[in-house]
Length: 133
Image (cartoon, rainbow, N blue to C red; front, top):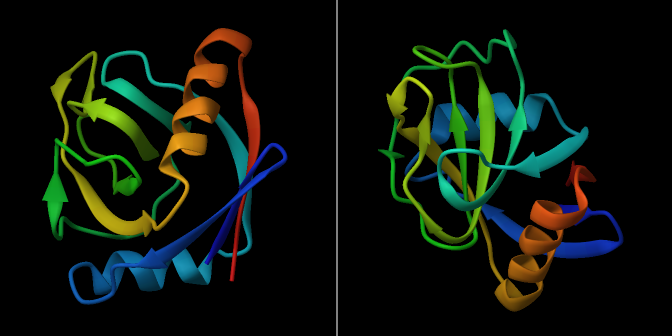
């Protein structure tokens, strides 16, 4: 998969062995275009708020502590549906407390550039994002 954030492109892989339902649901929604904003509660990450969007998923390979480059899909519950991309230290949370999201994809390279994009999002605001096969 290719992920483009603003003018930066990243290669990523689906974690189909660990989160097959989440991967299939997201792949069905591709190409997926939106905007990222910096997380408010979780540390060093960006997120895509998706409101009431329903991927009809439960939890699989869920974590509250993704490593840099890991991409989580929170299938809604005590917070809205969202996608989180970690670029540094993250404890996934919302104003309702700790969340666990399905680790469904991982950015496989250029994590230093991903960090730059994340920090830039914090200080300069929202950026476009596109997920495509």
